[in-house]
Length: 165
Image (cartoon, rainbow, N blue to C red):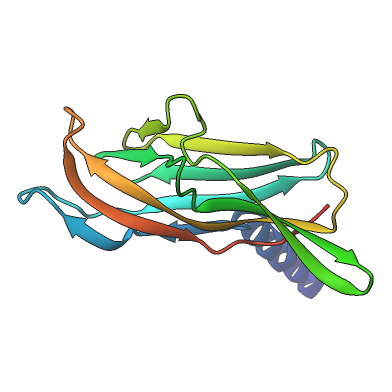
């Protein structure tokens, strides 16, 4: 009886850990280029990719754990963040890539994420007729001071988790 209770507790704990950490990754900005000296640049970005099968929403959540504001900028000429849709046609796998705005606002083209704040990008997949979806690509993040002056910049690669529709 004690062994059975212990097994159920271990199973519950492992299930809790696996569901709470699914899709999360703590990442640093890669290839950090420092423009201004004298700032503490320690920190990470907490990035989570998820898909809700009930609402058909694909979501990318970025939490700024740096001590400075993070500026995300969407370039109309060179978008680098995509939603990939995976199809199977005539026995072949096909990919359709849709460029998306990392700022979440194509008109303004920039988004500032304060320290300990979160930015969410949601994509509605309701009328998509494909097998899987994922986020792919990279974007540049700029660490800025309160005057929005550039302290440092780096690249974050979203490697993409595949979600079945």
